[in-house]
Amino acid sequence: MTGIAALSMYDLPEIRKATDAWWQTIAASLRAEGVPDVPSTLDRSRPVSAIWRDPLLVLSQTCGYPLTHEFAHALTAIAVPTYAADGCTPGRYRSAFLVRSDDPAAELDDLRDRRVAANSPDSQSGCNALRAAIAPLSRGGRFFSEVIWSGMHRASIAAVRSGKADVAAVDAVSFALISRHAPDETSGLRVLDWSADAPALPYATRRSIDPVTRARLTAGLVRAAEDPSGADARATLLIDGLSEVDDRDYSPLPEMRKTAERLGYPQLA
Image (cartoon, rainbow, N blue to C red):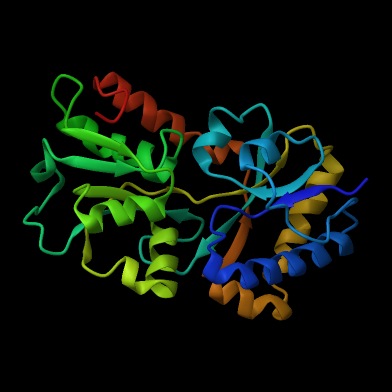
């Protein structure tokens, strides 16, 4: 039976051709390593929440926060890309705290009692990283006057740019890709500050995978990252390398949440 694959995290419409080409490089490399049931195309027909629970999942990319929380029983990390973007280092990334270019704020504390846009409560880059940065500044569990849940980084950027919100935390890779391929959407914005760094978004497979297939998946991804035929797609997607990881590498993410909770700031507020 053919398996399932999805690369939804950075699948902007403007670069979908590159995402598909990158998958073709990955799929060929996985088959060369003997991975069974590799699909020919990516699944874009369902929400990632359904795909990540699918028992036929071969490969996906996930945010580290769902990996370590809601989907800890379903997913396991196997490899992580390095991205050629500001705020990124090998296998790691940060969130850009974005404000309008003419906003007088000079530091995060200047945003007290103002409005924040965040993509989702289960996002490392959009919520957990920002919560960790704001927790030491909060008072009585509050800091912002309003939290606007936007649903996606692109919508958070739009909210700040339009004046609906005053700040948003956006994944460094998303910010770089949107700035490059839809520059009008990020014009008039600036990076006020960066979050603490964290492991970048991993490639993951179903937790029930057998050890042999897991090893072959990892080897296939490493092979794909070195395949010259995928160089153009990787460049478009800002992928500058790939390394093996496991779930233990993502343990700092729950610790960020727990630290904010200990400081009396369990949620963006």
